[in-house]
Length: 176
Image 1 (cartoon, one colour):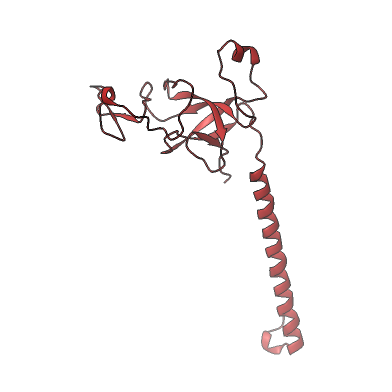
Image 2 (cartoon, one colour):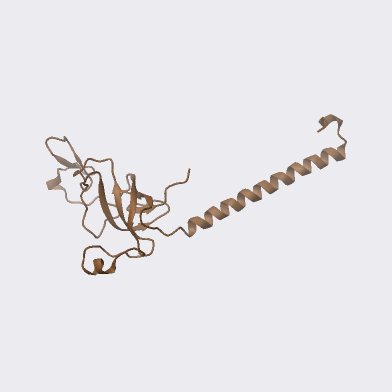
């Protein structure tokens, strides 16, 4: 392209208009891509077994990886009827196997072990020892029994989908 100073006013105007048109087209493409992503997030992909998801703790304090082990498409009705597996309350609800970096056997309701050898457990919210513990710190309590952390994993039952990751919910992992 010739130097700017050597162009006529008409050529300069045509060049600037071409740049403006390219910017408008680029912005339209960006807006279209955003709208497609937005519509995809409004209608999330249904979960399937063996998929990795992000589980937000019921206290809402942290997120951990989990694998979907039961969906509305894979649940075994005779197992539900026999009481071996809790039912699912919706098509996006799942049962999860949650992975944790915590030590096996240390899953406690809002508690921490003061010392790994003396086993004294205190509540993270009120500071009382476990025997004096009178409140439930879960922001989203489960209607099913607490599953103990065995070998770094535990079960969560009938977990709802929440793209924003509210307490006690699952979401798809972010794409990177």
